[in-house]
Image: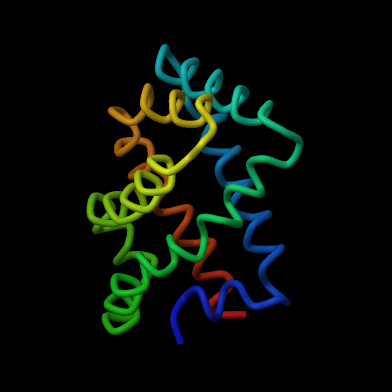
Length: 145
């Protein structure tokens, strides 16, 4: 059973999505400086696409993200610490997640989504790497339950 099978079952799915959205909000709030302002502005623009857009996108991306992370998570489980393993391999983890979002945005028909993503993509890996430990904790919380 892969991460998507376990984490997106009907009894957990809404909680996983909510926790991922909360994690994104916390990560965003921690950003400062010019890049923080740019990220917060971009996020506000994406939120304005339509009500509930961010949870919708998270719901759409999670199965593919979990599929991309499944091999690394399994390696971490085998080593006895999947959270630590993803965190220690955050560059590889970020690449796997960004591969999913890159493919998704490439096929997006919404210009605001594509344009916003393309403007921020250059710095995205750093931000995703910073979020990996928190994402790993969210995953761990629901794989134990």
